Every structure is written in structure tokens, then in C-alpha cells.
Length: 447
Image (tube, rainbow, N blue to C red; front, side):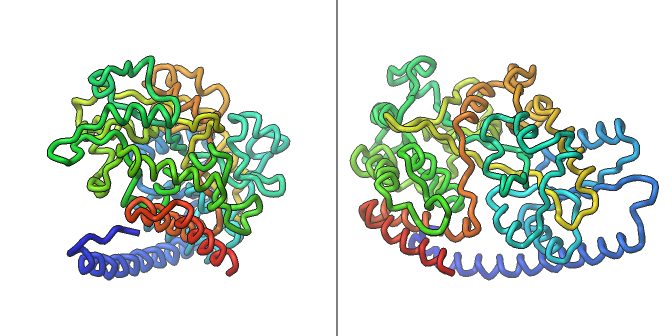
């Protein structure tokens, strides 16, 4: 949900109409592509001499290029296999996957956000990883090759339905110059806890003519619902809570832990006054890069963007572990795109064999893309040792949990957006905002 400031309503309505038209165009292209693809399959256009694997992913230049290199390596070592990779922009990629799987066609394997797994499972679109093809005898043997717990959220009835393809670990980033300026050593005394963040924030804040011109930190306002979850859920977990109950049948968001988590952000706005609501429409990565925000989320994919926005900031920022509530459970949020197998594919074993090869190249992948494959030994790879801050992200992985994975993620994320904005923008108490949110989530779960 976007905050509608005066004069923006008509623009928002126009944008909505435009997006509907865009969605129809995308769906039309996807349907045509699936039709043509089906005709090619029927005609045997992929050849008879080689095993052909079809691989779909979204358009991400660095990742696409690295994937092509891995595919070339694999095909050279396995001349009897051909992998045809196609990519499309995010919205089109998501649409084409659902359309293709519903039609019983599509790729042999693909990459997709982990939070979409329940929807794909419900649609019976996923096959479990083929252990024999992967080169292991059991799920436990496969899991032994990964950071403990890294695959737990992708297992159902002792079957693994996804393997991380690129993982974003949401650590924390600070501007070293700002910290030095206010007498805080950024290398020795960086904030470890949220109390430390608040204490540092009071020193880092710069106000001119009644306006905060340098903000110590901010919540990811006016970004996607997933960002609101990323801002709220790890702190909720640190307090010992969760958005849903254990079996995901009803809300737990208004527990004492849930209220404390939102209260933390509420107090940073109203009590400690280190977050400015006037700046809630800014592009935060760019603002951090330009020096108008001192602390912010610091995922492994974000760090390169800071220097793209402002080359002068290189060497002047530091990635640090995600802060933890005093006495709480250290928890870091991840958002991951995963490799998944099409349940309609007849080449699941060969696709699993390729995925095992990809996992064996974790260090290389990190060096090429900056994204993490949470495989054992990656921290000792030459690429990890050479990559600035990789040690921080890889350590935070040990304390990580994936962003909420639930059949109703998109709807629940919108509820969280409303609750956070109702509390932080209008001053409604966190308890009141979350009680309403819990009711809305429970209504969603009753459907």
C-alpha cells in the first residue's frame, strides 16, 4: 500500500489502469510463448541425440551471465546434455511460470522466490529434488552439504522441494564517516543491539531549520510489502514471536513479542525521534549512498548498488551484523530465489544432477554474482576471503530465517503494511494496529 499524499490519488488511479493493461499484454505474450513451446515439443524440435533441459529464470544481468558460464562448463563436461536457458523480466517470468505449469508444460527447472513455494505446491507444480540424480542417498545426506538449517523451510514430508539459487542476507550497513564524526569508532564500537542503534542514532541525527537533513536510520517505507515484512519479522523473531502460529492457521502477530517489535520502530519515531516521517518517500539505497542516512539494511546484493549510486562512498561504509534486541535471539532475515523442478518434467534426475554441479561451485558463484549459496565450506573459499564483508553475511546466515513462507504471503504482507503505516504514520498504538492486523489475517486464513 502506498501512502497517498495530496494530489497523488488521480496519478495512482492512472497507474493502476496502466498496470492492468501491462498485465494483459504480459499474459498474452506468455500464452503465445507456451503455445509455441508446446508445438516445438510435439515436433521434437529439441533434437534426439542429447538430453535437453529447459531452464527459465528472470532477467538479472549479472546472474544471467554467470548462469550461462556455468551451463557452458557443465555442457563441456557432459556433452550429452544441452541446457536451454531463457529469461524474462520479473513480472513476465512469474506469470509465465504459473501459466506454463497450469498447462502441463514449461521448463524442466526454474528459479522462483521461496515465498511462492506453498502456491506452487498447492497447484501441484513442483517435484521434489531427485536424490539419486543429485548424487546422494537421502535427504539427510543432501542437507549435510549445506549450512545447518538452510534447507529446512523447503522440506515437506521428508522431501526437498527447493534449493537456494541466490540468497540475500539482510545484515546492516553504517556510514563510517558519520560514526567517526560523532566520536563512535565504526570498527570497534559499531551497534550490536537495537539499544546501541538508538544511542548512536541520537548522536548521528542532524537537524537544520527544524527538519532532519541527516537521518540515523529509517524503516523501508513505501516499498513493497516484502520489504515491510523484512523490516518487522526478524525483530519479531528476536523477541521470540512469529507472524503466524506454528501450523500457519491463525495470526500470532499481536502477541507480546509482536507488539514489542512494532513498539521498537514506534519509539524510534515518536520517543527517540531518530526516524523522520517527512522522508518516507525517499529511495533509501540512494539516500544511504549520498550520505543522508547513516544506517540501513545491508544485504549482499545492496552493497554494490551503493557505489553505483555514488562511487565516492566506496571505502566509507561498513557491513555489520544485523542488530539484535538486548537479551533476544539473534535472528537475520533472508530472501531467496530457489531452484525448483517442474512436476511435469521427465528429466528431473538430470536437472537435479545439474543443480548438484551448481552447488559445488558456491565460491565461484559468490565471486561472480555476490549472491550466497549456503553450502558448507563457502566461507573458506578464495572468493569469500577476497570479497569485502562476505565474512559478515556468511556469519549472519548461521542465524538466518527465510522471509515468511505462506500460501497467503502477498495478502498478509499487505496487512502488515497497513498495520505499520497506521501505527507509525498516525500514532495509533502498536497493540491496536496489530490487533486489527490479527483479525484481518484470521479472516484470510478462514477462506
